[in-house]
Length: 592
Ligand code: PEP
Ligand code: MG
Image (cartoon, rainbow, N blue to C red; front, side):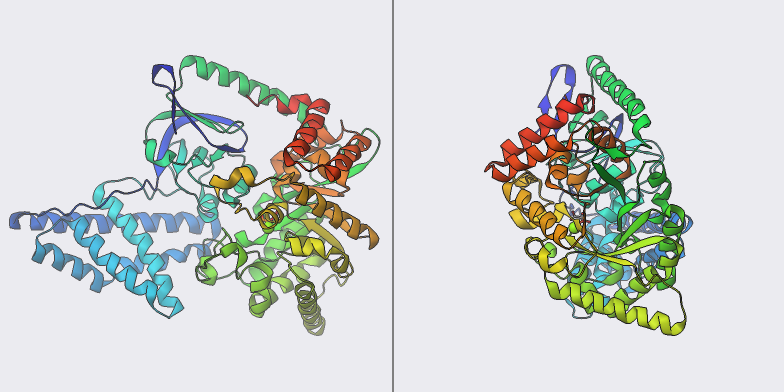
């Protein structure tokens, strides 16, 4: 995979997902562990093995307590309680006694004994019916991984929330929950073996403004902690041991980016109006109430997508109605009178929530997720909808349902909403009775029945990340088929057009909140197809405004007309790219 260049410089190529260049020391986490060696020890060496085991247990306990302390500080005690179960595993006498016995009786090294015993427990726990016990298998796997690293002296299970020096993180995978914990101060950038542009890890990198690359295939195996590297998030390259010449070239790239950012600053507070006077609304996608400042400084005219599932990540129990109310109220109040679209819980796919104990499924993206889960879990849906309703008096909130695939789901969700409104009315709790309700259009079936959905919703938001995945049958997480994940596929163009047309009939607003909305190359096409609003990560919004202010709606419409007739995704992409590059060439200077 690595391209070997002159003078020891090596380059790895992946998929660029978050712009920016950084350089620094590499830290490889979760490096694939090779088979654990079984080593015979002499009788005289047994006390030393037992003491190594003891030290590893103590060190693991200290590390867990430290992570817990930091999480309590940053996110509150509720979130940190997840580590209580981890700590309990370390104290389980049945496990520890058995490891000691294996070391003594079989005269083997501590790693081997520990691995063998915990593996057996994990295997047994994973098979039991009881959901609670099954979850303990996950805790035990996490803890035993930490103990093994301490025994082997491997600095792996790094506490990502607390790094001691700035570094570039390299991992096989970073789950959205791990990404949420990243120590922003010390993470210069990150790169993973797997993933694609629309995996949630990539989405988070963009909103955190961390340069990132995914889909590097085997970087976590070939790179070593401590190596010096340069990460180019514009083009998807990692250069290990960069030469002076390479550093100089990248220095120029960074300068171009800085001068572009200066240009963009002027656009920040202007409206996105085309040269021929067509206004597009520009909103932000956020993950937590803490993103308010980023929204304010991005020039956003509201929040087009609040991904509330991040409130549920990294914690043992789901957030209460009151906790959720506080988050939604804070955002509503801070951004009023601008609208804030709160999407109800969209768990599933790559966002697996420990708090809800969802079993692993064969096809998580097609499974028991999002609105499907909420409609079957009234208590979860109730807490969330009541929290949104209560917060609705503090600003301009809207409710949006994810993953609608049929009309019944929208009708049922609305019936729940009416029920919870009636409850609040009875309790004398104020709320905005006219709160708008929208449906995400992210399944082909929803796009094909937008005429029916439009009669029961006030707005649509096209979730292109999923719409592309489901329409083209291409897993959005899988880097091996990333080339098939084509936003300009004629099927996608036609579904977007169909959605806009159906919406117009009922006077329904159409936003796009998938990653397509933040991609300057694709924006002319979306606008030409007639969408009203684009919602993307805050750092991308200035570019969108800059581009739209240089574009003519007539040219965008001509492009869309061409795309609707065209049979080739590549040709549509080429035309849209050409238009974007013609009107705003400076936005594309950082591509090599
Ligand atoms: C989408 O699918 O386009 C979307 C915005 O939702 P998410 O990326 O959270 O699945
Ligand atoms: Mg989606």
